[in-house]
Length: 231
Image (tube, rainbow, N blue to C red; front, side):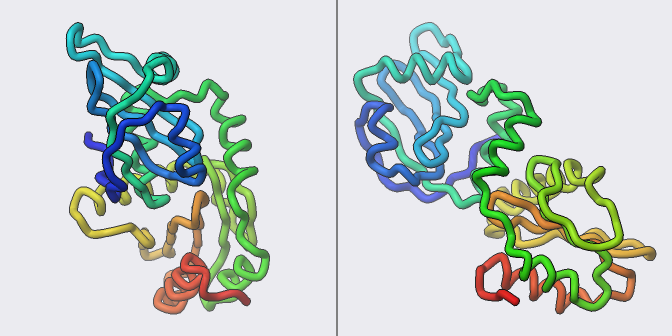
């Protein structure tokens, strides 16, 4: 599994502690090519999220916090900065988790609560606008499997984690197929429809009746995702 390519911001020689000084709002990865080995660091607004490094001479691999501390001691790194979209960053984080190189030691529930606290919530007007669309039964906003905001007559929290994993898998597929960023995913059965969509650091889940007009609902979601529509 390969990390997303992102958009290259150029190659440089720089000490690890100076990366956040150059761009404190940087979201992406530093692809390390030396000295002494290869690796990468995943960064979110200057904070390390994941790291790995393999030494050339010994072929020994360092992961997570061990890799980050090792790289922090180096006077400089030869690296290429790769800027990520939110979708690319989420895919990269999933890949890093599968590699076992995430740096955080926070428990999953604490991590979700902490990340949700920094994520911008959806306005009540936007949430209500989605709920008012014909055929919408319920709408919820989630982060790391936990409901942050909900409207409607259905409890979808028990499928939130699976829905997020499905959306992240879809993001990875669209990146691998060079289709661009994933906007929305739709599950459809004779009994109803379920829309999952990214919203910044959060995820939107919309449950509808089987005869709901998806065109209007999807347009509303897309306008809210783009920040061009508020009730």
